[in-house]
Image (spheres, helix red, strand yellow):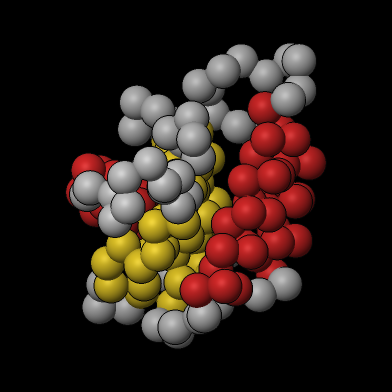
Length: 141
């Protein structure tokens, strides 16, 4: 089950972070996931710096499992514009194809949100429709 979803900007600034399970009282749970997502950025950068297996082949946007924590597993996806999508799952191991599909839907919802002419680039996403789309995507898993 997905417990947190985040969109991180090109400069590693959080644009969206939503938790779907209360793991602490008050803001403790959100702060814990914010920390987990922030720590995952090192793993994202490390995976992006790895050389391609076949030169000239387009790189895969899906990064796979970034790192496991004691209670969670962190997965990543990077768009061609270097926007980072992070999902934190409780201790389950979904199939890679399922995760690719979820990330593609997450990315499509993000594209819809930033296509709004009133959205300012690289600012936090506060769109209620984006939030509803993400909640729908995350609860269908």
